[in-house]
Length: 407
Ligand code: ASP
Ligand code: MG
Image (cartoon, rainbow, N blue to C red; front, side, top):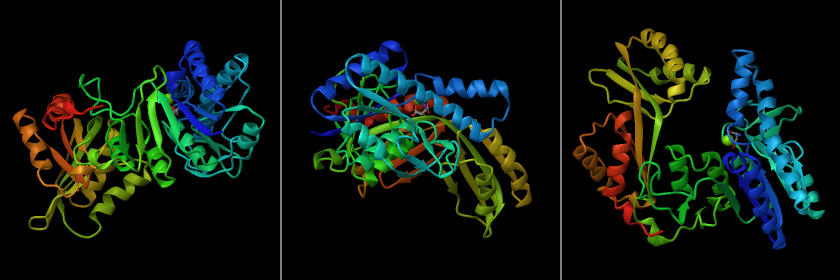
């Protein structure tokens, strides 16, 4: 008898029919004799709707109250799924985050899981129940409800799997797995049968919406493979794990893109110690997260510093940066909110020359201007004009022969 942990995303439980469909899959799994724990997201766009609802009541909802409100989304879906299963003759019980023992810190809206005390989950499994856990939520030491950040149900599932000693997490949604590019942009993108944690972490951080990066991080930390597959068909999906076969390693695995980017450059900064902290500490204190940061080598002790934010945080970041730039003696602040980024990712690029050149060459042939470049050992990212991002993804997918990948 194996212990199976499955997670179903919001699109998979978006309406009554979809909940019934998911319940059938779970019941079939249980019939094989396995113990089954299921983590669910809120139905469809429930979380967005709840946020909007709060905003119609007050402009700046209290963080504690907002987390309680948002946690109800997953409670609704978990209870409906449990009812449905039980009616189908598959004994089931729903548990909220607290009951499932998801203990977190006090960072409302982006809480971190400190510990999973899964005693109740285990005892319900022993009674023969399928246990449906409301994802995305936890409880602080002083019994306040927290949420784990958008997309946080993935993290709940991996954390529970680690605590219960499950061998693998099945993460089911409306996508069939991890592709060589977003299939909505590149119709002949191919599904990958497997991908390493580190590649998936880069992909998830640089625009792929397939799985939340924190869940991948946790999977790697506890060495729990995550199978990403569709809840609507039986296609094999993509296994995210640590032992990707050698043959697959030696190339670019995927092209990903992100349109939710804005770029801010502080121009003509007198170069002296403390400049970066003078800009980024206040940004952090304002709760604004920056992404790519590039500082130029200084000429005559004058340097430029560029960073990116999400489009949603662009205005707020500008409001913080403008007065700071003045106070540190910078010449001006220039900004562009109509940018996006495109990245190629693959452990095969590590220590192998030529990939960056090929990427730049491909973009140049398309007449695409590169505004900023950033790299890690296994990723090359270019920030380019927003309206050229899709052209860039298509061209790179072809240039790196990802259309020929065998799935
Ligand atoms: N319902 C939450 C969200 O939409 C958490 C999740 O779906 O994982 O972000
Ligand atoms: Mg959701």
